[in-house]
Amino acid sequence: MTFPSCTGQGYTDTAQTQINQKPTGKIVAELDPKATLIFQDKRNNYWFGSKENGVYKYDGKSLVLYSSKDGLCGYSVLDAQEDKSGNIYFDTPQGVCKFDGRQFTTLKVTEGNTVKNEWKSEPDDLWFRMGWDSNGPYRFDGKNLYHLEFPKNKMEDEFRAKYPNIGYNPYGIYYIYKDRSGNLWFGTSSLGIYRFDGKKVSWMYEQHLTDTPEGGSFGIRSITEDKDGYIWICNSNFKFKILPDSVEGINPVPLNYTKENGLEDFNNKVQYFMSMITDKNGDLWMANEKGAWRYTGKELYHYPVRDGDSNVFLFKIYEDNQGVLWAGTFDNGIYRFNGKVFEKFRID
Image 1 (cartoon, rainbow, N blue to C red):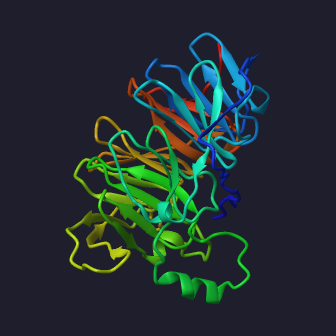
Image 2: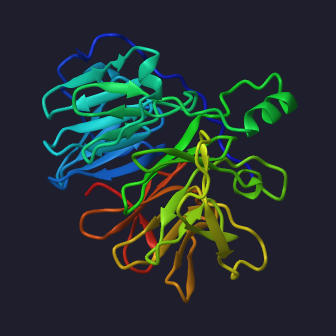
């Protein structure tokens, strides 16, 4: 199993925002095949983020592409979020862009060494990763964007001794997830998982979550909470139940958990997943190079996604406001689930 490499660097500045060129957008006939991100806003507009060309907006009638020519701060869109006022925020390796429906502004990171250790969390906060090379997430409180730093964990020295010439940050964030209780989970490229409960930063590491049996490095690319409160991380081996912390005075606090066997219907072969979600019905959906999988808690269903005679490698699984499932791919565009199979999404 091979996985895409990730490189990127966050952008910092002392100013709070930078107003970019007023967007005009470009009406196009079809999506970029490298569109991987799907997001639906409160007005039911769809946003499709490309790995190379910017972001597309689809209102049900026309498809408009916004790029750096329109003020978008990055060529590759990693994620999209919406605040309570309806502003859309795009997470890119070059920075975080806010779109208010008229223009893009680039948020600037508040500088200061003390800020990096001031971990806080408010209900309306938005969290970003800004690429894959930052040691910690970026928190936006509606006014300021702060870069927080992960406390050093015990794996770092061992990792750097083993890979002294490594060309990337092993703390780089691959995935951010908020569970139903509001706890924030951060999956790193090589040094496990951090969890922030609003008061303290916890940490966990199990080698099988990051490294595959074949010897490849997967990183923590997917996390979800199922309908029974179990946390699933990256693969099908185990599910985790989080317990109250039993150790105090250590930073980061070792995460206290138990684990149970996960899924056993993969012919005794561990499956790793690029994306996992729990849908509105409580079913667990998982996506990887073999298509989509749905686990009801009792039955496991497989939905291969095909392009001619080839399997389509799924990168992202997403549920929209109406409960419809979508899938983003590495280089085959966007697919939509019709209740039986995933079909290629095309603009009528």
